[in-house]
Image (cartoon, rainbow, N blue to C red; front, side, top):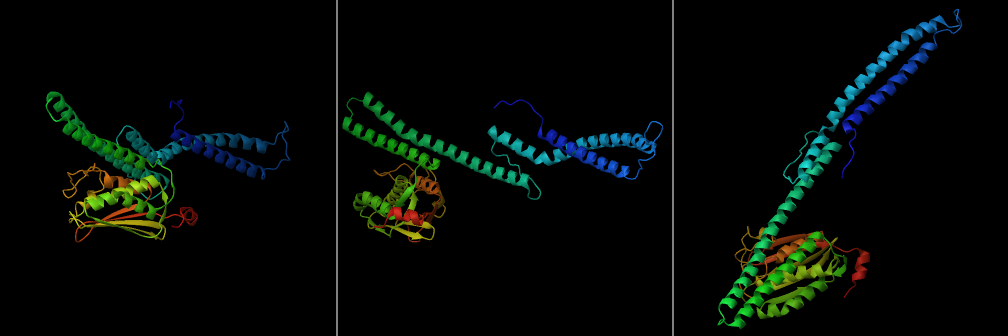
Length: 369
């Protein structure tokens, strides 16, 4: 926005200080003048009808008052300029930091020293905002780089398969079509996962009262054939657990959790337990699965996009796109919840999610099974 030039805040404050000092000085001079007049009799008149005492007082007092007013004006302007500069120095540093941030430099911090006041509180809030912005920008840049890398792989494979089909007419077309179908399916799944992740990160979804236990049962019913195929026991327990949020996103969140728990389980004979419960001011869902032991340093990275530990790499038809727990973490964060990953001592993982519980009025909307 283009604005016309005007006085700076320092000049405005300096003029304000000088003006206030002049008004106070003028008021003081008026009081002194009125006080002096009380002690000068107004009875004797001179030849021209003028009291000589008062005439002398005016001749003496008026120049002195003028000098005093000029002195107050100079002192007010100079003192106001110095005081305004000292008071506005923190604001200048904040403005410089904001200017650097607008130019793309998010690593700069103000870090005002001294005791807490309005300017230092503003500087601290601004530093916190810059820190969060820098973290989000770095996260988005890393995510964009990883996403472009992941999308490049299926596209490169598709181009290679098409080149093979064009250069080798004798190649089995059915095999090529099947491989192309698999690669394209993975690319579509990755794109949908990226869109879902962006949607949950942006918080652009409607909230409504839902039952966490019903959504858990729906997700388990969808994935039951996969569990039976792998000979994994899938168990869902828990009473009605009301929560306010997006039913679609919560369903995707629980589906990802249960699917990960099934796929990353033991070869056969493993178990996956899904339990929901209501706690004071919170709705809790816990997904626990057996599996191989997880290194302690691997667990914190499981929610990062495209981060796969050695135990998580899969080469079968459920290879996934590396966004399962990243989507879970994003959905939990969008619902102002908390996510906790705990490795089981005997192998496997326990995922605990706490979401803000529904109020009493919202509980009646959810209903009881």
